[in-house]
Length: 340
Image 1 (cartoon, rainbow, N blue to C red):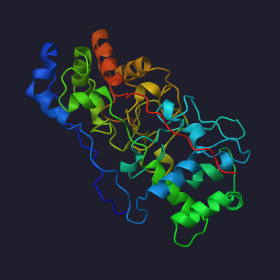
Image 2 (image 1 turned 135 degrees about the horizontal axis):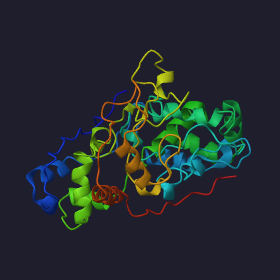
Image 3 (image 1 turned 30 degrees about the horizontal axis):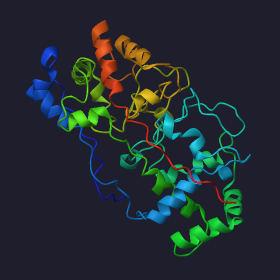
Image 4 (image 1 turned 60 degrees about the vertical axis):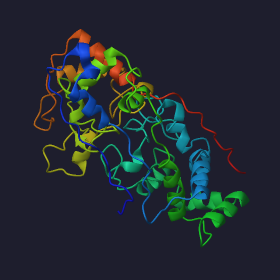
């Protein structure tokens, strides 16, 4: 895939553990490190699906239209809710039959910069993801032909596809291209941390600044949640998954380290996205911090960076204060009415 911009997931340099909590924002190490978290510029669009405003608007309309589900009640936006950090607030995703699926709904924030999508990374692009939930029997439970027939029966959609695409057809490829173009526009809004990273020393509290040092040092969080997007885009066993919940190991059965390994999620808008982990098994951010502090299930596949941390109560509180600075102010979304 040929991107206009490189992936840009900047790996963080670990801070010395001796950073003084009383002068966090005055240390050269902190000043240099926070600059590494400044976000990139333009959203990258692939050469074979370039941006256009009309295509993005069509994709947005499709995203919030329940026409893709068998019952006509479930849209992409039903699970990826703007006010829940583009997740749904459930432990496990719920399909058209209202039965729980096996995994939590992942956030779509900043997916434009990732080259492997899904909890197990089986998808190589946003286009490739599109029809997996639509045709999934336990998810939206629609056929490709059924989706195209429904869209083709609505004159406004016929007109919009004709306007956006040269050959004027409503096809799987064009549906994928439109939805992916809109989804690439789902990016993190400016959070208090971003203002601090850009030089506003008053944007976050002293506790949060101490938490940032812990995040990059003793807490070892940045070894996976690295760079401006707060994800390395990779897969790790963090000692949570159990039994047959093997994640990326299903795609690479001979790899010891990929057993129970799941995608590192972004921490953008993380305070909105409880519960946590691929299976929604951890209810709060406080519980997430406690889990990492304990170290998770010890086994050959567990990541080398997962081990007991020995965080104090104050360090946990400071780390939580930092994580809360990654959530932006709610951005209103104008949800289009589906054409009928």
